[in-house]
Length: 435
Length: 175
Image (cartoon, rainbow over all chains, first blue to last red; front, side, top):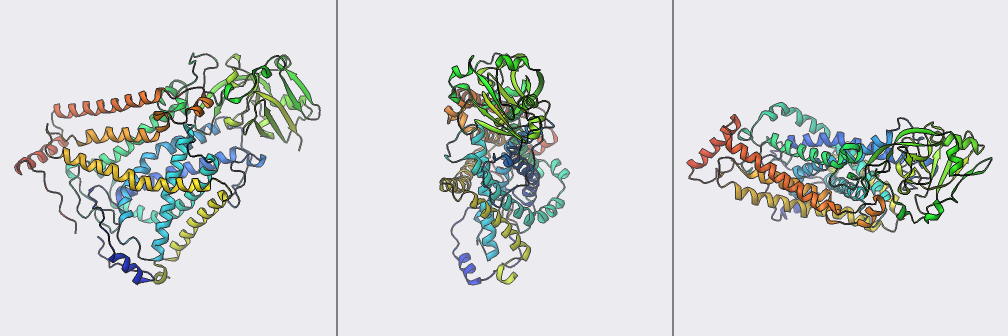
């Protein structure tokens, strides 16, 4: 181990007593564990997880906290700088949320490998020699606990498994802030050493070193290098390839749910690797955000008697025929969901800004869209920019055909870059607000 | 400072940043009746990973190394050809568990209109495919002329034969 004498902080007798009470501990044998390998994975996670954090926080903003749609609603001191989520580029949320979920999944093998590489330190003896080390151990509990918590809740949520029994949004947001605090502290404390360690060995040389020439790293006193290493069964480049291969495997099994099209079926093990039960390749054969059956809407309310109610300076009611008689606009737009999946389709219908003008509010400050459905996501508020975008539609048709019941017949909202859950289906009314 | 606390001021500052993040986050869910369940999941995640999953897979890997290192039967070590498909199977099983064991099916059905029936079969096929590919790569390594790396593998094998089939002793203890 380290050649320096152990130093104790205050109160030294306590830390010495802990050191003397050493229980039998496992012996670590891997010849590959070492500061360089840990640093390589640490730097990958530093860049990757920073992207996952930023895209995750952007998703919170995309929901429209300023319209009262933040989940969780009250975040106290952890308020983000709120801005109106843009409508351009139309694939913005598709990109940010696809990166959040997709990269978050791809990094799972890297996180597991990083934890493998440092786990001996959990059992190092003595566990602490000072108050500083007590705090650092606590911070590591928060770091590891929160990253695992975020991975587990995220993976369960994208597979619609709500076995945890608490609000996903509240828990994932809370876990995120615990992680952010612990991540910042960990990076600040470890990055200088990681950079030094990375410079101590050449990646290029490692990638040329076969198994037979693979030797343990020099012990730098970090406690990562085994005292009695076993003979390697894998080269260091092999270990890196194994972790990278795991990440590639996960990428291959998840990218299809976001890219869609011909690649969708490659998301073999995810619910969004499939389109619909019919899978007939027809105009309505793309993933459904929520089925008509599960909406609980009475099917007769979508029939001939259906009207969309426009509230504003000149309230109006329009039936399907009247809507079809208005100028129609067609746009190719994605539906992109918080679960990271997305699908691009060609939608046709009436521009929301035309409806706003009809209702006598040509420059609305916001709009509230309500569905025939009852429930938490049965209404969604839109910003002024989202109503006025020329591609924002009350869609009546998709891919040249009438909307299917599962896709929101008789009419649904589709707005560029808006999270899918706010593209309200089975629209009952739109209230255009002037202030 | 160093004497009393055991590290520099920067360290203490970062610890405070970490604790502040956690305190702010905890305040968010303090009024949520489910906070205890969240805490249990948070701690269970650490305990299950560090004290169940990690010992299980390292223990399995040690057992695998012990079994396979006695003598490479065909001159090429077999250990990684078992280890890698097993890791792939374990990783995909853990990450896609809900679909494989059909947990939460009513919600999947309500959200997508689809059930979870295909996933177990697909996962088994994927595991079988990884095993087959690994076995094929092994066969190629056994049959092909030795590459420079392979030569060194053979050198290992010769060293083992010189020692009467006993495994080469571990590397010397580090200073």
